[in-house]
Length: 417
Image 1: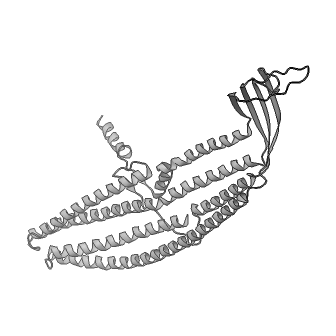
Image 2: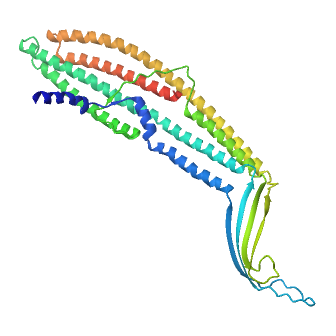
Image 3: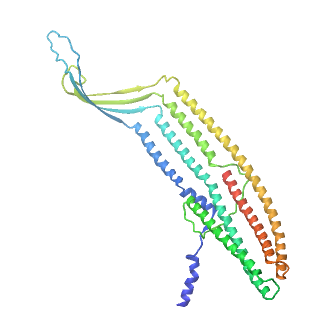
């Protein structure tokens, strides 16, 4: 039984206590899926289905019901004729009709309306994609900020472990009279300060993780491990941002609107049928209630609109020029941003190279200080100074490394990779 319990305890860390791992790519996928704005994809799709159904009804028969009752102060009167008597019309008259209109030809206006709505849907959905894409830089900022605190936490833990080991050595030296009394207390004070800094790092990390959780729509445990990504920038790949696709879709939507406007003045032919019941009917000389009907064809053609149709299309062409100008500005600003980011990448790479040299030298200084402390040549405070210097140098290098990853990630987002 005891062996079984031990076996279960060995398995628990792999299931119950497994730490969550979070990657940058996972955050990108989650923000695209869970951010509230993403719901607009389906909302726009549903709205478009309804709009298309409304447009399609224009090709179906249209029915109208009309009814009226009137009293006239004067009616048509026929002068008396020899050997004939015509009953005069009543002053009160009644009529009810049902009219059916069936569109036969409208120059392709309905199809043009359908294409215009589809073009508008693609543009709106691409705008949603653009807005979601722009959130990725915010994800980058939060992700790498958490990663930086995670790396700082590891450095502080290493420093804490080193101090704990050094305290034991110092206490042994004090007992042997080689090191001044109270030197271990100086190290203990530094140990307490490290513990305070670890608490501060933990609070900051939890706060950032909470914000990142809201952004990606997924709860992240405070103990989650942020995986250090491998980020490489490709200078040869051209810009492939969704904004460029949006500009193209806007121009296609303008083309669809232009085609729709060009159909508005096309001749329209429709058939109609009118059925009714009234007094009088179609025969005005029959002063009684009668049913009646009328069927026929109708042509409607606006042959002169004072060039309003032409001017609307000219206005759309100006809109296309505006979109082209926006695309040109976007490419210019993106190129400027990429140049600045590439400059920052080169600068931080240079910093990291010098950071490595500084750390190598500082380790030699600390090693010498350790020997001097053990021999009672320097105080524990002097040793703490050199240890802190090394730790600050390592923190600076780690900060530069995380900054480099952040800038590279932003560079890729700016370029659309």
